[in-house]
Image (cartoon, rainbow, N blue to C red):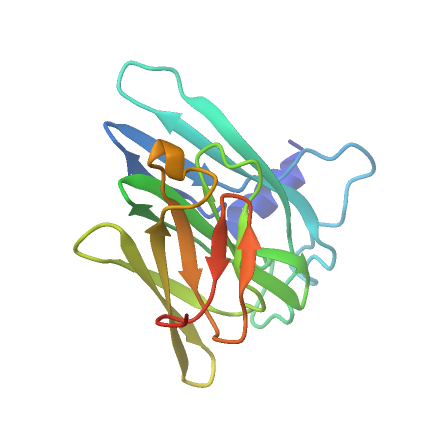
Length: 210
């Protein structure tokens, strides 16, 4: 990794998140992807970086005495700041990442920017082929997971600028693709007029909606 990229990564942070996986530890973080061409401008004490930087969310599982194993890797981008104040050098927009256990399995959620003004909250379990979009348009949202007493449901508290507060529930339901094996898949309750299905299967809809 070029020194300028390493310094920018330190200024930005890598959104480290941890979750228990039985007796093992699951770790997620979002390092930059080493550049393959000309180096991008990482900014300095007079101007911030102005372009997005390729990165990847990586999920690793490790346990005492075992070699850490990379189980998933999801391409993403880290966007430049919308505006800056104070003195530089500045980092990129750090986004955010969180973790929780759902039905005894680790789940990682993070803000995944497809563009500077289009940021979705996405989720992935270990070995998922791709992350699932839970809540679109989550720009500048702080997510605070709260695990239910049963361990089969998690409430996501969403705090946004302007005293905007919302709650979403993530819970496990048996899906057609894995009922025969007794498996359970996460479902996210969201707006009543929205119902989106994902491989798994998973759905997004309002709590209590039929």
